[in-house]
Length: 135
Image (cartoon, rainbow, N blue to C red; front, side):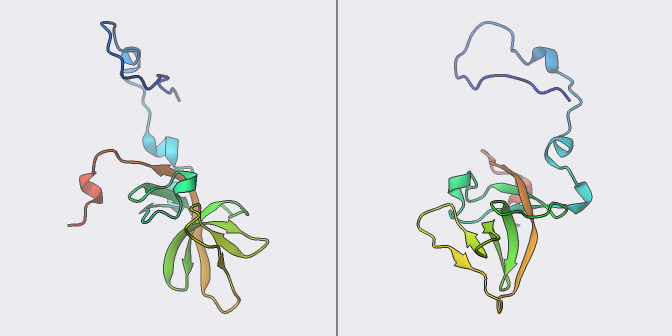
């Protein structure tokens, strides 16, 4: 796999684009972003509780169900009937936000809790995608 290395620069020059020689990479975003295609789903982040790890409201998250969640992983879980995206602390049985405005959430024995998958990637769209707009 070849990746185009270029700095993010706003300068404009009269020289040819550094990406000109990479016109046909044969690069698939699916291959780059998804390790287990049959066990992966895509979701949209809502809210500001995960900003500390770079997941913002409206970001696309890639969730891998094949990965085993480890303490410190960003996960998507069903917590009492609601889908949440949090960091899992398996030792203390906590769901942690990455925004100081939100307190940790304890996972009790009486809670309905199921990890749906590990967030492996997040993508920020700088222009609204027609595929992500509610119809």
